Length: 252
View (cartoon, rainbow, N blue to C red):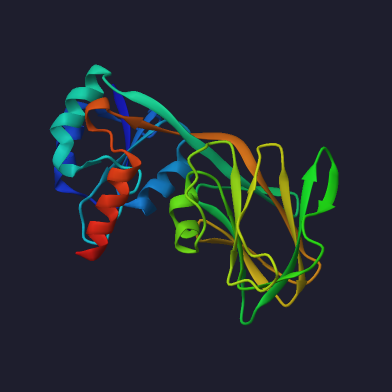
């Protein structure tokens, strides 16, 4: 069996994997060892199923990983025997700007530069663009995420945790206006945001795309690129287990 390994750093515990499996960059299965940042990097670079493994370092959350480096013996045994399930957890977010597509695992983000940023929001469906609000939103910006990134920046910004893989959410950042609640969009809807006043940065997963000025616009939609992870039935964390673990780790 061949595997690919993407790790935060060279953990000595990983030596056993090199002895058990053939490690190749062309392997279908990828092991992402580290925290959420390593998982996101692996998801951007790898199209096949990913097995996230927490490094156990202080401050490393690893929301989607059920296992840690201490579970390597269990992983080697069950991965080698094929005793696992592949779970589709969501689709990557596609950002379209100036005719080019960028694919985010966590979120697309419009962020103010020095002061607040004002922007208009449209919904595009079947080639038709309609205003979602009859007024201009102002604040620190907005982020759009799917189920994968809903537990990251989106959750910290007060957005919902999304359990359905075929929807995306727009969450406002310190916005001013009569309506500031997050909005849920379906698979067939494309969001278009146009800057109305001031300037800001268009970012995906912490990577800058461009600086946007008034009249600049971009579109966001759920892509067809699915993200799948490997789960072991005997070691599968429920959502309540993950939230409990993260809360306790943050307290420590």
